Image (cartoon, rainbow, N blue to C red; front, top):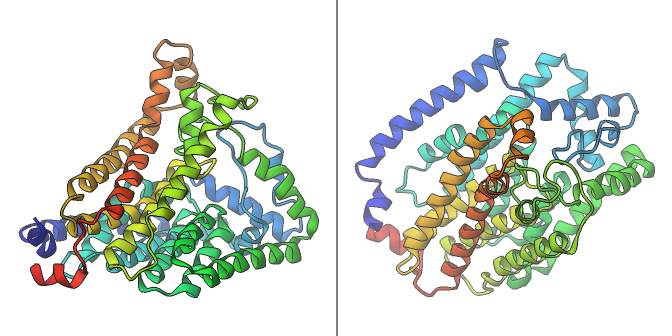
Length: 426
């Protein structure tokens, strides 16, 4: 098995053909079509960024659309730290079509670059790494979902891919700085610094925290303390509420759907929903940190440690929308690399990875495609409503199984000692 995976054998021509087809599709749909004005994406997330950019350029309220919306569990509007509004301000200086195309092409380039970095950092050189990166970019549904909706996640994914590369290479300060930069856009990546604790990377933790602090200070300098207060007082509390909306793939979403709580409208928190989610989140983060060793480790193990922390990060977030699952490309690649180096944990890793792929790349898109607000409200009055809510939690539960499999494999001693030994065996 290890030999066939290492050389890709007869699968290489098949993968190459599939990658060429996926690349051609992606070029036509996400490059040519936008440039010629024929892109059919909804771009509702981009519109939130553009609204913040226009407010920033006009010295207005960048959070106005978010705070003035009729608050519901689906949420809408700009909800990022103030510095992000400053960074997207140039979008307001362009014609609408130009800004949309620039944003889309930036997202595509960031995803493809990040996927290549991940594959090159984790997979053997004898694997078809470029082909796998292209396939991940243009056929993995959570990745393309970001293109259709104009989401910010590809940029965060690129930063996490760069941080992964620094992590496996043992570069403490640059890894901490990049994680801090990712957390300056979306706060969740700060969780990844838990990896540094077990490795004794205290300077890296300080670097990451310092970058986040500088980004917050820059936001205050650009927009004033009143905007930072609005973010802390009116935005973060909403983002931290119980949210059982069907698309929320965090432990918070799973627990609230289990209790049929805050699914269609916000409801007051209860102990039954407020306690289990943080406990599950903390357990996942602690488990990811526990899998790290300070001693010298192989690339496969280091990659799997980072991958486990990424899964823990996604599950720990109060809100993890489907588009955020683009980050699963990191743990999925890490699990594949570790499985190829494993003797006793390979089957568990392959099964968990396959289930996660099935849940996020097939089941979730089908549920999203079949869902509209009218159908959801009608279903909420039917006897099968609770079962439907649990089906909506399957992607998050699959991620939980992937996290558990990575931690179990990392704590196991049945891992080949080095990448070089695998290359020689191939």
